[in-house]
Image 1 (cartoon, one colour):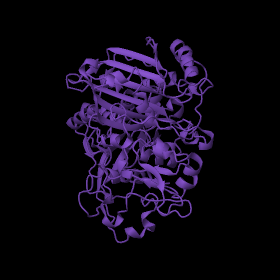
Image 2 (cartoon, helix red, strand yellow):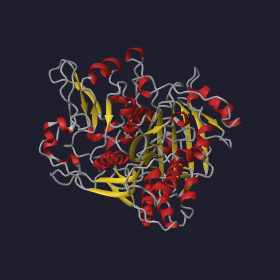
Image 3 (cartoon, helix red, strand yellow):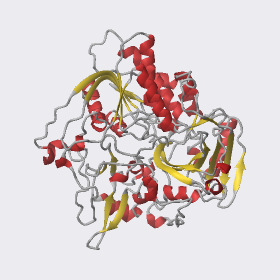
Image 4 (cartoon, one colour):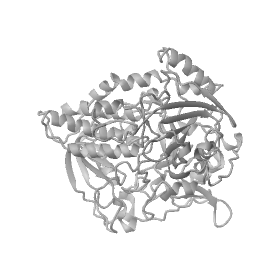
Length: 596
């Protein structure tokens, strides 16, 4: 068993490796490998060269490389600069100021600037803001668009069935705000810095000289990496944190920002839909939000549950097809698309919450998964979890009888506070809505269940439904499924994948070891292609994975275009062989959403 202080050092080392404030670990010329790697069924040359698969002590490329680190100490280290991590940081410094205590709080973020990797719808419930920063309006928080109109629809291929948005239904958005969450995160970062939080966003390597990343020692490390975090995955295994919960389930959300004809712009209008173009057994739906930020902007997107079974389904192409619906297309006609992105989101809810504390650290936000799926909202619960974490940690890290300044602390009080909070109550009430869709009638059976047991009984039924297991295990063999004939994009309303990725601002240094690693380089062709017809080339929303013919013409190979990766984590989640392991790339790499 690793002692607590060493555990935290290792955890911090791993995160700072990726979010280094000095030249990153991947900047060593002798470590560079080509971006595109090959695999075939007869001979599988090495695709993966990353140190997480090929340990440094066994890799001759590391011989003679200086491995000494610069070490520093903090009271609390926070991994991840999203709403949860920033809320924890702000609350910690608020408490320190109130009690006149010195407290060093360091926050590390893999994006090159705060908010650059943040992607959400987003229709924000302001309850957590009201609690954390009551004067957020006076401080200029970018919540500019209160919801003025709520529209919900069941779509058929050519028509729309309106659904009344009754008070008390999860999708009722009265009192909420349409926001660009990346801008909100950037503003929160400014508030945190004003309070004295040290924020370290990542940088790309700037020189062809290797230098070890910084190592931080802390009493407590808060992990707020977001959905399916790289470090959280390791912590789940190391401490068996998922022993008493169901596997997490996920969806992929794809989003675009459009500038539309001002005549079609209705600021404050919120639209959601379900059904077409998905069949009744595929969970998902759409959103279309009209922002009020001085110009006719709309945010639109499509969400597909990753427990779908047909390997031929492409979430990206379903999204493009949806935009041609007669109820949607008129809003976009004459407009132009200005941004694109994609991100996985948690859908397991109450049943899938893991243990959130362990010696030396704890989990907050979308890392453990506090999203309210029927509401399609998780920002307010993520923020609240960060605030609770701060309130649980503060008395312990400031206690005067600590035996060591940096020994890892266990804070089980956070878990107890969580179970008594509004988060627990909210997620428990809606716990059965998502799994209720697993029935013969699919979507329609789930809607009936929601109407009876949530709207009428408010989730007080004395049972808890189960999910169907890991999303990766839900795909059927290709031979048992029908290929989906998607229409070609018209270049006006619908678009191809690569032109979309170009609008995400994604960039990675091409000569770093690919951060999309394979545990076995032979599996993609031998199993995924042979059994499922290569589903990774369809579920990836960025064109990262391609199966292309071998130069010899006698087989196929997998090509990994790691430079396209938008950090959505879908491949790590949905790969039916669980062979893909997403790890953090160079600090500063990835998408640049800039307020998407």
